[in-house]
Image 1 (tube, rainbow, N blue to C red):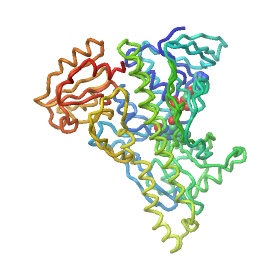
Image 2: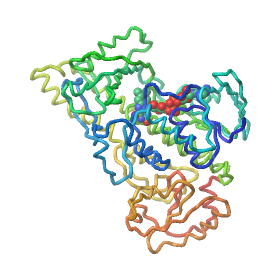
Image 3: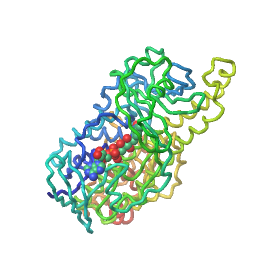
Image 4: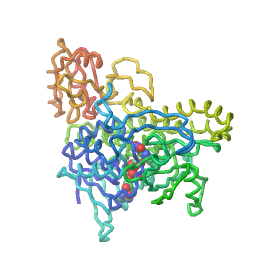
Length: 534
Ligand SMILES: Cc1cc2nc3c(=O)[nH]c(=O)nc-3n(C[C@H](O)[C@H](O)[C@H](O)COP(=O)(O)OP(=O)(O)OC[C@H]3O[C@@H](n4cnc5c(N)ncnc54)[C@H](O)[C@@H]3O)c2cc1C
């Protein structure tokens, strides 16, 4: 079998990559060892940047109409237990009450993985060049300078298939065999905790307890901060309970009912559905690529779930790598284009790993001296009054992360041209719009109802902003000479010029700014060569 791109792993990141490639008209093959079903979700929060990509892929409406009730507030709350004391609440509106904010046409959505993955899969399958092979496992591969030979087994028939691919991408998760085979090491905090989560079903849990709805409950009691409870599918009564366990904990010894009593005041009978034991890590791979083999998603960064960044980080990898693979296969990407994937995404991944680890470690402040926290005494009330604001600050930090979601920048990227301006402060909570090269080109609402983001995607876009914008002709000619797809878009809205700050702005296919200036560059061909990685 031959394919330009062989993607190993059909989790959300592998699916996003083949969707991105299919959308760009690049044939590719995905192999996934399982049958693709997601019996229980890990991921729940599809963040703003991922939603912007979903908008481009044409699935944003579906995500927003997922079975999570659209009148259920997405609030996150710190509690002593469900039906116990509420210590702090961060309000996040229900889907029906969401309005686009100033910085994006999209909002973060709660859409658990058993709904989200099939949406990616169905959309990817609609592209004729995308082939998804479930129950197919990568056994081994050999990489040469510009091709990969992979041995794949079809698990249902036992057939062995040799796949020749120009590029192989390991999206094969935390235990990536592709990463192992390349000898790529992980750097960072190898073990942050040993953790478990349990899924259970019970109907009207919050209603029976008289608790105001929220999607996420951070739980702390006299024994300290111990875990969280998450509404996965409130309509069907599906909940998840998550906590840390000692190293080498024997799951057979787990007392589920005791954990339920810790989590819920007056628990009724519940149906236990499944349990999963895992290790929380904060690690990033030392390299994201080796020749024609690349790695993406959990294969290269393992992110503590605190902050809901794991999959969302991986989807940004898929988009960054996707356009670069398409450019190289399309013949216009330069020989250094693919190596910029590592330069751009490794730092972005490390930033998210660092912040998610900090959010997890922030729980340590709630370990000591909380014994009376649940007591109905003046001492308990005084403690709650003291701990409440700290608990609120902690959950606010963990869930108000727009700066992380859309404020990541490819500083020092070899394929972006610095303009000499100073970088804005890196603020994980707040996003500060900037069109500095390397940044995500900001959203500005256009007069015709579109977003500037709707202009980007297929090829490069040269924005000519305001009435006095120089002519884009020289850059158009240079792009044509190198077969680089480039569209010139003139916008008169003063708001766009205000935010983008220059009259000419070159935006890449992934929606990041490559270059900006008030004047045409002296050597347009050199500029085009730089941004196409030649
Ligand atoms: C409790 C919890 C909550 C989370 N919540 C969020 C959240 O709200 N938001 C968020 O962004 N992230 C969240 N995450 C993280 C998120 O689930 C992961 O980052 C994400 O699933 C990683 O996707 P992936 O595609 O890289 O890897 P995976 O989902 O692990 O997929 C890898 C796939 O590769 C396949 N595979 C492996 N080896 C082979 C092989 N040899 N041949 C063929 N196939 C192979 C596997 O079967 C698997 O399907 C959470 C994680 C946990 C544990």
